[in-house]
Length: 309
Image 1 (cartoon, rainbow, N blue to C red):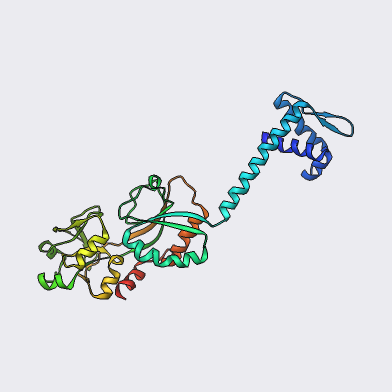
Image 2 (spheres, one colour):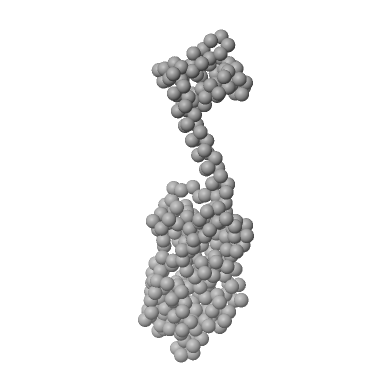
């Protein structure tokens, strides 16, 4: 029998004043309880109790050991209560990372609904288009768009994001609207450096065959917000997820082009710190947004609706 169990039995014998009382609690025999105390004494190499026919008393070593045991058991019980409270009390700070445009357009507007359910959670939202190191940044959960590069992360896919080529009407009026992806080589393209391949854009023809086009342009940025603004200003053509331009499409500031050609969709995942069991607040946060986006469904419908108005 493990030491902790023997310590608990010994303390209960001391506190109840009776082997038989502890035996009744444990639904066992008085002899079994006595053997447990004796096993503890054998492990320690010291006598803890002086037994008589009807009673027992602590030896000096027994008194010292009981006090220490009581401290250890009380500390363990306090730790158990604190952990249980933390696990069931949906409160505290939750640090969340997301791409800038996605966070601004699709996380922040849905936070009030989350707060209505869990008013004691505080959200620290880190908006960054680069892949944040969860451990170094102290991030609890992150939204990631695209194929995951770090296999150590624990991931849950919650949807799919569709993309499009877009341009401002003013740009198209000056330079013409391309009718085939290959014509992009003669256009200014706004390049988002967060892509794995900055100057290669992939389309799919009507048969699903990939069409890879090499593009170039005078404006590059690692910020989806900066590239969005550049496109709205008429600096060139963008290759982007639809949610970045949703309000701009509705307002007529930009329009999708080359719509006969599909762009490969991107997975949308939430990821957790490696080798770390998600807390209850992380699980509730992920479940809430997975439900908001249509759990295990295609997020494209939501994003397309946002884009089309």
